[in-house]
View 1 (spheres, one colour):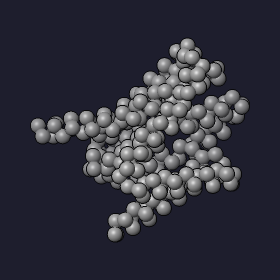
View 2: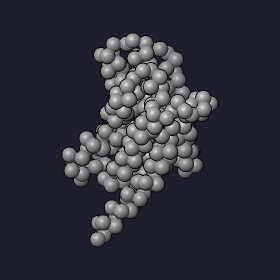
View 3: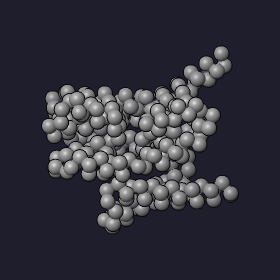
Length: 234
């Protein structure tokens, strides 16, 4: 009975924690579905992109590459590099699931995105299989349904509304970041440092698309580790 109550509690916590992602994903996915339709990609292929790739930045980038006639192999390689950061995120969370049945890890890893990783990382005290599964499933469902809705009905929306759909991405990141900034000024400092690091790497043009993000994550994570380790020592 206690186990069942604890599982129900974790599911409820997962639902509340995932709300910013669910609300933010839907309009962004609609924008992707609409853009994919305008790129003359079929409804089936558009749906499969969201169901199988499930990575917003890579999907939008893939559309741009398809429009410019880039080869399939180049698109696969580029999206792989861009998504490589998700492997690091999943690996960093894997240590939290030492008692989990190993067959669940691939499912958990598939649902890891920038946003779900942020939510789970900010709620490490609540990490459990029901909590993580709830966040991943609701976020994934929102993304897929938003893609379908954007493809089917996106064109009937006013032009001004169509062009503003992608703004939801920034609003979603803000809703994830600001509560943590209120808890600690170190989070604000790390966010600023991370932005500066990425801008420098991106402006340098020394790395192909995807590697600048990966290196930015590594450098920012190292800086963050030093900041919070010093705080812990104090």
